[in-house]
Figure 1 (cartoon, rainbow, N blue to C red):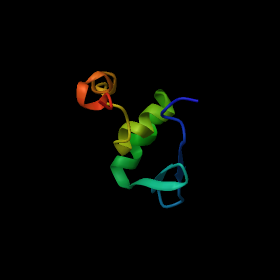
Figure 2: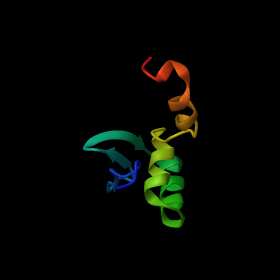
Figure 3: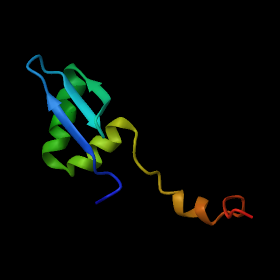
Figure 4: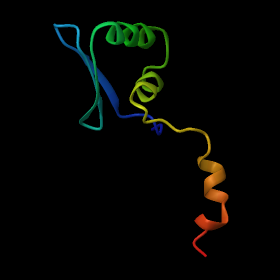
Amino acid sequence: MSALSGFSHTQRADGTVLIVHRGRTAATLRGARAAKFLDEIATGDAQLVMARWTGAYKFGNERAARRHTRNQGR
């Protein structure tokens, strides 16, 4: 199971797209933003795209922060 798993999306009849993460609504997209999101979902990794659109993704500095002395529990 990837760290990004747990995302899903639903498209409503009015064109609104709901992005849900672990059972809670993480983002609501309407209009042009919803259309752009659906285009990205069709061409890329869905979990990564949804994580990026909601801002719930890793920034790449977690490994460095884990090694920092203040995070060593000393």
